[in-house]
Image (tube, rainbow, N blue to C red; front, side, top):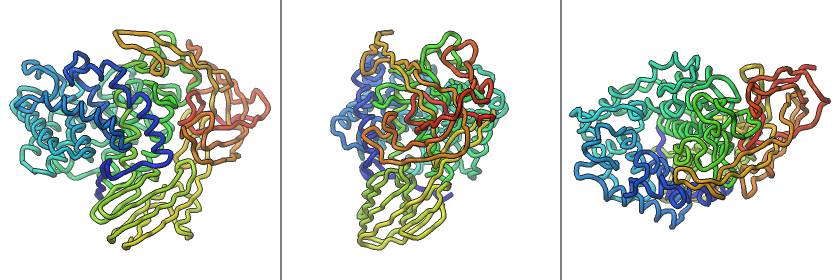
Length: 603
């Protein structure tokens, strides 16, 4: 495997649209959750009485890199306050979770796995030299408890055992003590083997089972890549084999899977949980870094540029629990909801529209994407994701100016006092690719960089094409961007208090009621694309950076019985009900109400 290492937040400084996206996140729910949400503000992790399990670690996992990427002193101080409180409460034997000693055997140690990962993130960002010893004590205690049989993996920990390896690999690289590999083997032996679950993925039963739980599955994709070294096993790319099965029977056009909360089949009106989006992104980031296989970076782009922004409001004060590819309304539905196990508000926007896991966990999406922009291996640096960012690495400064994925141009300005190899990852869909004025092919292109100043320019085309989908439907895609028919809507604000948690503007709940037609089919395959630089809100519905005009017909689509705000899986008929009309499609990530998978009309 051609392994790449991540840079840390102090070495990277997001620029352009990426920085604006991170600033919006910091000014929205992510940067204020510790002020407005009791499960973070008053958590048992910091001595309060609220939830003392996954929510604070989930939030810190994204909040910490967000703070350090933006060089925001107030956010950095808030992160340190939480880490200091967590460390100060650590027991003498290394146990760190807010749980009495006599209750440990009943405590789902998924929280141990998660907080150990968060501590590594904090160390990477802060350089705080207390942290390696804290991680050592946490995992050594975990080993002793598991090895002695005083605790066992159960519940979420059993199905997420591989998450521990983020911190375990870090520790192995620092001290290499034999118990680390012993712990790795215990985790694998007590953890769930997902290869045994494959048959249950092929025909979703819509029953709540951890082996078909969408977040477990998107986390699981990286399991072999992060664990094989410590387990002394050869890497076999099991992620690809398992992903292919998941995609065949539950795939979405944005390269994720349906899961509301469990696998839900091939249906563009089923939901995809937000936690699964950010966890699939993280799995692909780890897979690319640990294998060097560019397919993971490309898949990461598609889910990050489409599914992530689509399920967040533009100000990032509200989110959905589940998004739908064909989403004609975000209104409370009747019971039972049109999902496998989620409630009738799950696809509306709000502070906590179903369960609070996504409220805490969505925060990692954009910051960890930014941390994946550049990677390194020995004397080689790769531009893994073409994101506007500046890298500073011990005498090497690389500044990437680009509006990609909206505009397919990039300029790298490199200043170095040493020799190194610089590699561009050119997307596989790129056409008419030109690097420094010379035509080239997609793939990795490497340069021998000498001391001094170097500039590299990249330009290519990505043309709109109809992507065939199941059920006789098609989706429009250009490069890594998907396009949807946007549906204008009326916003319905809902402020209230439930179980001691306020929902009030700007962190209130929202429902979106459609006001424009949505029942369309593609009339032909002629597309006119217009590209512009993104504005202050990169994924804006009113000022989208990219648009595609095409002719479409209205068709008899119909509603999914018995719901009044959910369209059918497939239309009743693909015959035109109207003359051709020119419709402007916008990026999937910009459209909160949208039709994405549609048929070709029958003349």
